[in-house]
Image (cartoon, rainbow, N blue to C red; front, side, top):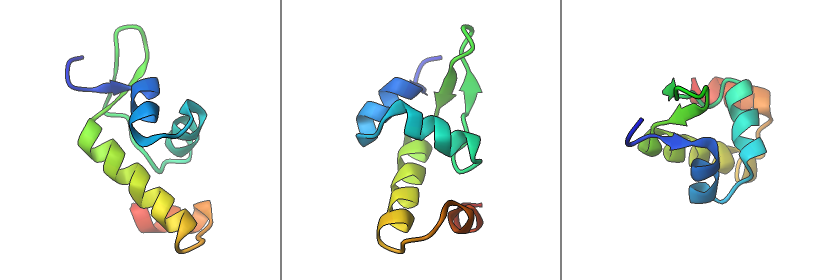
Length: 74
């Protein structure tokens, strides 16, 4: 789908590993907007970049755990 990013593209944009994006998605911290015909998760760029930066800030600056971050980003 045009305008959406696959996991690898998103990972490059925010300078994290694709496994980090998978982890955030599996933990419910990041939501995929859709799936491609091939079954790849697709992310809306503005939302995903913003959400990942928020998660990273909470981890790095506030030293919150994943469980604590879940409460912050819902």
